[in-house]
Amino acid sequence: MVKRVNFNMSDECHALLKGVCALKGETVSDYVFNLINDEFNRLVKEDNQVQSMVLNGQYKEGCWAYRLKESLIEDINSTNDSPA
Image 1 (cartoon, rainbow, N blue to C red):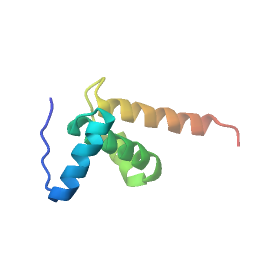
Image 2 (cartoon, rainbow, N blue to C red):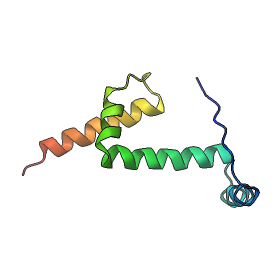
Image 3 (cartoon, rainbow, N blue to C red):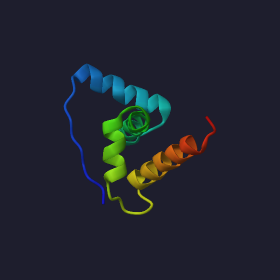
């Protein structure tokens, strides 16, 4: 399932966002999703509360959140398996 997210921004910021997306050849949706994806990947590595939230979540197999959780579990396991 896909959910719609709306947010407000100034006209100037919107113009910059549209311009950057045009330069990058991406839709605004793809560009914003990639920013959020990058931030979630950073947070899941650095923030214990976010780690706990992701680890405790139940996600549909194959979805983005499921893959994020699997990646986190692999990182934790590889850290625990590393010699001290």
